[in-house]
Length: 608
Picture 1: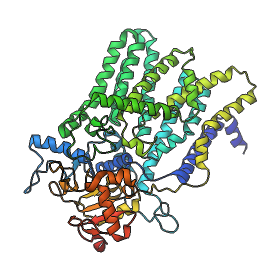
Picture 2: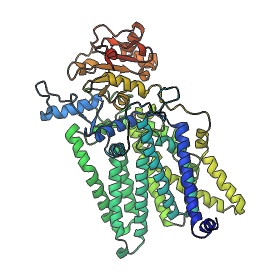
Picture 3: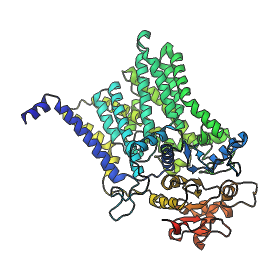
Picture 4: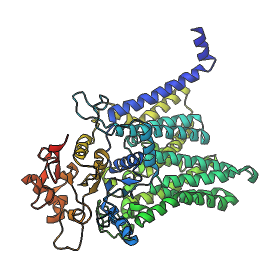
């Protein structure tokens, strides 16, 4: 016992004990959050990335089972022009729908990371009977792959906190670093992103790495030329990191502009050299993928090329992605009105949440303070440059995805600034606290209260009642997987939730076309179910989830008229049979009225 006490007091054992307790607290918080607030994926982006990662892990290449009509259209145009992509003995498969279809929606870094994670860990893509993921009465409760992907993102969250700690320690001091780390780890928004399945935390880690490199460059800029050779390599690393971020989410690539602005403002006579190196490294990383996209689709960034057009009056909701004949044009007035309207919404409803809580107010106050440290002043300028850039990019790139999942979506770019905002905000809090000259006990009490107030959303999230870990309606992994098991490997489905069919059902599924049947008033437009079923590949199953069945009658169902999916759904539910002459004539009666599943024959009777 005396030896143990000696090790704790003298031989550094107390430091190791504190570290062990810190690690234990982190693990316990993660376990508590996952137990009480974990949900299966609820966004199409998460399921889309996950199914793409599985395809990579299983050796199917960079191909997707989530088929967007617009993607079919773009690939078809390129292949018709090049006269390639033929199905032996049949007809030209210009849309590449009979075989693996190249993915045009996702940049590669995050799916590749998921593929590696799936290779390392024992992912079980079937709905397992394991007690860890099923409730006591045998009902489906958690989908194991969703949970393991959440674990990966929580490791990335830990990396964000650690990197923010050391950066705060460098530009402020250890007290600011510890409090900022506590606030970051206690930010509920970051935990929501950790279980969302999105690439946001990976991008946040990259952004912090970029901040680190620019901090080092700034420091080297105040050194003589002979002692600042490291700035060359750090500039190259900054360009590479922005390029990798752009290959994780295309919109991140716009941060090359604040990087070049920072280098131009704060690197003196070396600004041209360092800026050129950063830009060259950025282009070297991004160019091969841009060339790939051009060869496959004729666009530099796949479907993301048209994100500024999506969600406008010409292409509301997801109409652009669901179109088989879209020819989007970039109208400057249309883009201007989208920019102004979305900027107003962001500034009114989202801007003050970028820090995850009250800390944003301290960050804004810090914009008026004159820090003594030139590094702090210059990194504050870089943060403002990033803020201005991301405000414009987020406003122009905003689509229906932000409406379907407010806050927690891939189009929320301002959240990437959260670690820097928290660190600068905590630094301002310490500056103001020092002006009060409080006694040590009251100072500690003020720090504790400040931390608790900013962490209240997470604290309440951990309190009862417990969240049901299912994102239903509309997503029920066990049901979608059952429907997928009824279909053969080469069968094609159509659905309003094709991302869920691709991920949970592991079957190729095309998004609902704009119309259910051909409009007699516009017979030359091929935007219906039959445009794919008759001319590209037969559709063997149609799955309609509560996502479409729960839509509003007058504004969404009736809006499509007699040829729309609303009329189709209403008639099928009321008559309990599909429209006369529809090729998928067998209806699974057990799913009505919450869901509709139609096939060409009664596959459920032959299911094992």
